[in-house]
Amino acid sequence: MNSIKNMCGKNYTKVSEFVLLGFGNLHKLNVVLFIAFLIIFIFTITGNLLIIVLVSITPALQTPMYYLLSHLSFSDLLMSTNILPNMLGSLLLGEKRITYCGCITQLYFFCATTITECLLLAVMSYDRYLAICNPLRYHSIMNMMFCVNLSAWPWLLGFTLNLIGVLTLSNFDFCADNVIDHFYCDLSPLQKLSCSDTSLVELEAFVYSIPTFIFPCGFIMVTYICIFHTILSILSTTGKQKAFSTCSSHLLVVGTFYGTLIAKYMIPSKGHSLLMNKIVSLLHTVFTPLFNPIIYSLKNQDIRTALQKLS
Image (cartoon, rainbow, N blue to C red; front, side, top):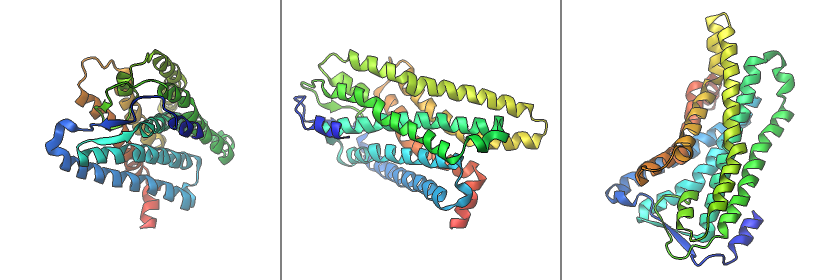
């Protein structure tokens, strides 16, 4: 983070601030949207904090699966607090001014939390693979020390791999236009505003997507192929239902998270309206952090039991 602070103190650009238009084309709905997203923000913070607290104070939830879930909730908290306050400001004021340094920092934390969550979901799928496909060795392999080490790598890679790309972008010139027709500082609109050659950043983004998106996504697919094969080989219907229930919540979260990422970054954007791009971004940055604790609360008996004891 010191490198970002030092970078922001230097004058790399003629633009000192950016203007986030948010949902500027929906002026009549700004008050309604502000109230709706404020409620979503409160529920997101409350739901994810509740998951973290429950895992911390409930002995029955102090297992590798729930320990990793608490990391996922913390990542969702960072994502929400990074994006939603500025979006709420743009809805309340009609537009939101953000400093150049603030914009670059927001982009950095957005990329970092997205990468971290991609890798955390892959680690969680490995945990479910061991629990279902290799149950006799699960506790000897997935002990808490190994689980702590596994959970540390997504955070380390998430907050270091994207640093080079963000530092490269920060050296670009933004000569005139400083208006971003979005509700947060994303890579694509910043590239469009820059009057420098952005091909290097595009190349870096593609290269980094291999270990941070493509490999984790492929790994999750392989683990779930093995999981489904094992579940289908179970003779009893009760056994199949019990095995599937242990991974159904994670599978729903994976589908939601990766689905929005694929829709936003992998599907060609030609012909997509700005409104459609904002809607997909909303699903990824606003609704996914809200859905994750809801999915785990509704689908997981242990979480529901811990909630009942807490209340």
